[in-house]
Length: 376
Image (tube, rainbow, N blue to C red; front, side):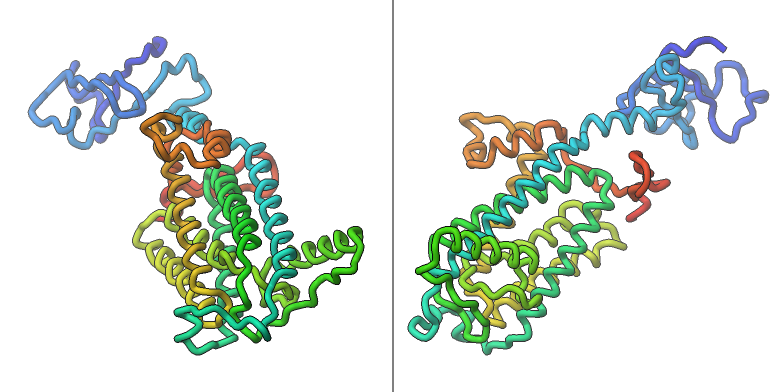
């Protein structure tokens, strides 16, 4: 067989080669995997559609076979191209995880310090609020909000693990959460509001006569207890008060919905999941307000901060022209833009909505037989 030189002839399907005249029903292909091919039909031109005859199956070889003897189709080349376009970069994901952990620790320390500044509920009633003043309090809905937070959190973890580009999704979530909880640790301590309810138990404050070493030890113990509880009152271990501006529940609720909306295909089978995540997020926020667990402004600020940061981050990621500082790109003036450049500098384009089942053993991961059919 002569060596492949970048051109090949592929016969029509369902045709007997012995019965075909010489020079008929052959198609010469010269192109690449992007579909930019120059197709020339050397034969009967009675019916030609889109560059080739009906029922013609075209086999494309983007590069000479002699350079890639181990691959007989373009699938391997396509996989390699996607690997370069969407690199895993596990190290960056690990760094992003530690940044998120640092944000959670700062948030926990801020809650402990804010707890020491909370006004006495007997002397300072709740501030006027449109929700607190007009909605009857139902304490049990606070537990419902905690359960919905847990459900959306677990669904988000499953979505990330099953996504083909799980390392990219993971580090994006870690970075966004680290920024949000870092900002929350500042705003929460900057302005301390009176308690919005009278049904939550608040542990005693640190004695002012305690030594510096005793104070540090107590704060460390409270931070560890808060992290172990996940910041959820339903666990019974969160006894610190005053963490209002802005709502941590709303951050997780909206992040769960935004992840589903951004990375899950909107097919007929999966459209109900989009609606379920949207309803779950909004029901959780409503439960927070009806249970008087937060002021209305806490939920509103958390909603706008989470959605705008998520959308801005992904707008940067999906548009190459916005990833460069310039006089015409005012969005690049945000303080976390250098952080974004480091973590997203190697990602080229929008991450596709493709899923693959990871292998538990071994370093390689086995994809589904048809990744798109996995969800469509």
